[in-house]
Image 1 (cartoon, rainbow, N blue to C red):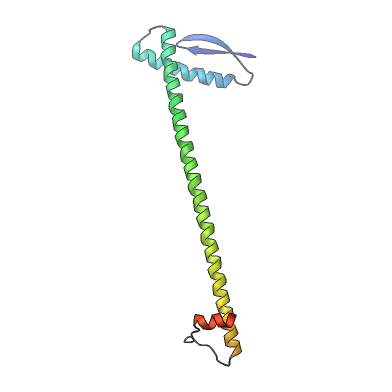
Image 2: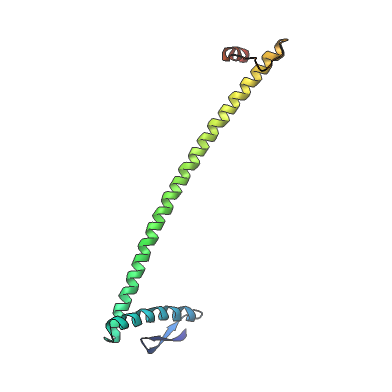
Length: 139
């Protein structure tokens, strides 16, 4: 265990921490010291304990607000995920419909080709094969 010296409201404190966490602990203490100093500037030196309590309450309030924001963002991410899954399902349905239509078009073209190959008629842009003839040709 390593010992770290931190300062709160002008007073030095020695705190134990795990090795490698010294810089992080100093950062946390610096943040809390900033809150204590801001509180001291607003209300004066009302005692270390009261200043620390008030600063701690402000920090806890910030924490709670952050937790609420994280929950709201998590909910939004969940909703977006559901929307994405719904869009993917719709895409798959539309892709399936398009595939079916392409297969039907290919079958109609094959039937038309069979009709044209079976006759001596050369199709031109005016040639129209009714659906009924194509159905008969497939049968």
